[in-house]
Length: 360
Image 1 (cartoon, rainbow, N blue to C red):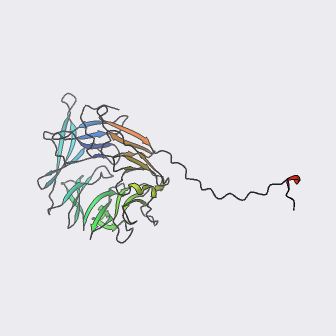
Image 2 (cartoon, rainbow, N blue to C red):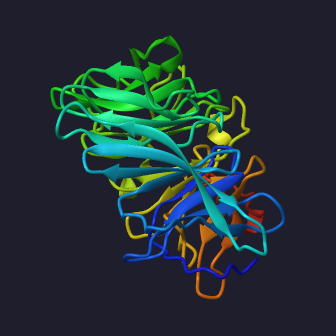
Image 3 (spheres, helix red, strand yellow):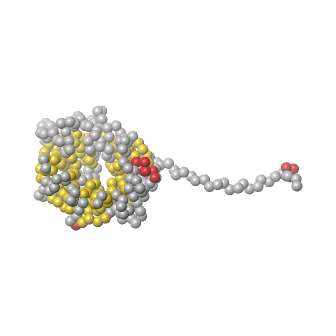
């Protein structure tokens, strides 16, 4: 792995572009934070720092685009400003950072929380969620000609954010109404039209954590079984959501962060990676009904990673010796299911020699 001459902490969020080409994070510590872009294509990953004249605040967010630019979200007083950062300059001048201001979002009400949504599947646009008690607005903050624009307005306070397709049109959000949380699908191509997505039980809170557009696999957290449990289902399927017993121990806190792509129509064959509450790593496949609990790599960044279609999980990490590295691992082979032994049939009578035969 390439050793990059920069200091990296191991606790900041690490966001990977939808196509796996780039990643971004807020590096540094204390008052010396700066955006950093990782290039993940090629034989070895490498990082490029993108500092500006003024350090970034700890609550700033960064998100990589497929063209190599990094979107940054900053809070400035009551405004939420957005800009694109990119490296400029030559080797002689040293690394420089260019900045393209995109505009700002000013919430109408107090208490509105503005956060970036996961990277758009098309790799070009970027979206933010402005959630308040009276409603939630989805803003497109990059990929527009005239700055941030609202693309959907949803009644109720929404959180989460999972893309359901590879075009960046269908977005799933967890909407809270009257104290109950239900995942809904938002069609950004039809003005934010909202339709139900999860309705496991009438009074249950059903959240969508992750989705794979290729196979339709959905990872869900719900209290429908009587406690918070991790479950899985298939988008568009009439079969009920299943809550495997092997996931019960971690069902309330484990966070699925990566699903193996490319498994068209085979949701049970998808590898799933979960970040455990103690910082560990778990690998699971619905068909196996067995969870492999592993220790995460030293310096694991943000508890994130990316599956390849071939079933290889790539985990970013940073240590003093290797400040810019990727660890690859495969899902172990699950043990065979236990064999159930039926009662042995009664033994056939053994022929007895005449001299040993009992006398009547």
